[in-house]
Image (cartoon, rainbow, N blue to C red; front, side, top):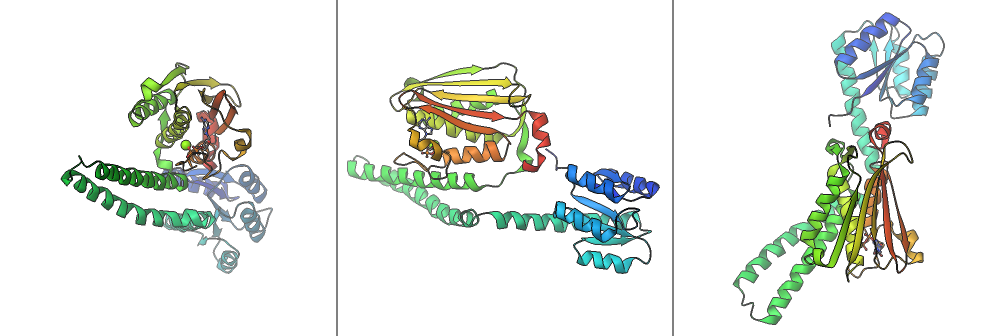
Amino acid sequence: MEQEQKKILIVDDNKELAQVIAQLLTKEGYQVAIAEDGGAALDKIFNEPFDMVLLDLQLPDIKGDEILKKIKETNEDIAVIILTAFGGEQVAVELMKAGAEDFISKPFDNVHLINSIKEVFKIREAKLEDKKLARLSSFEKFFPFLAHEIRNPLHAISGALAIIQRRSNLQDEVLAKSIKIIQEEVQHLSGFVQECLDFIRPPSRSRYSLVNINEVITVVINILSHIYEDFSTRIKIRQEYQEGIPKILVNYEEIKQAFMNIVKNSIEAMSDGGEIVINTGFFPEPAPGWLRVIIADNGPGIKKENMASLFHPFFTTKLRGTGLGLAICRRIIAERHNGRIWVESEEGKGTKVFVELPGNRTFASGREKL
Ligand code: ADP
Ligand code: MG
């Protein structure tokens, strides 16, 4: 998907000038709106997300410093460039001290205006990036470095082990078994590191594309049948797909991973075999155009006292579990796709995982969370 269009609000009571600026900015690829006075500007800012305001100081209704303050109170991430008439520089400088990002004296030429906008956006992006980083927990900040330090030796161990394996006499049972243990442990550790990274990886906007969920699930089942050797003999899978469901805008890799984690849990729960039923459908609830996927197994179910902890990072009842599978699912489905995920389970009967994803229209309006 192309980069999201930046949205700029032009606030100027000089209609002709506002129009000229609007045309120029549209040509530069920005999305533009115009407000002719302070009241209209604040109205717009309350109701729509803007990235920047070009603010003329000579407005008929509200004084420049007041409106600047209100804009920043509404959303401090909106950048403000002051447009000032000749001689108004002193005021403009005061406003920059009060939080405006830049000022331009009228009359200005197009190149000057565009350069200023680009420069301000560049600084704003950097600031937003810093803010995002500050919000991450120390685990999230620290782990990528740790992961790097763990992975390098793991690769080296795997490589060296492959050589040992080739050169050893594997008739020696103890030796063969020891090599297998090292292999399994290395695999477990790199799997754990990968899951932690998947859990904290920030969303990437660029990877969103239109995807048919039925196809994603078919791919997931295919991959899992390679991972679990006795998969097809041990576990029956029934696919109840609604045909012709529309494609929805998602991050393909993330969604694939979410369904993989869910189906994996069912497979792991049913070590003695069982059945998984996967149902997809297009629903008018909770809003028109939502997709719902239900993954149901007839495994042992989940104890009541564990139900509240399922989505907590590191909660696991498995000897070698990471407890990150469902935590990752929730991140992907709820936080990154504005969807919903929940679990219903009955001990002794089985478990159902519900996933709901918004269709395109609802999704597009949730652009804040994309
Ligand atoms: P992990 O699989 O590493 O334990 P998850 O976050 O994927 O971590 O799952 C957390 C816990 O939820 C599991 O340890 C298990 O107790 C429970 N669970 C999840 N799915 C199922 C299921 N289909 N059947 C039974 N228990 C489940
Ligand atoms: Mg799991």
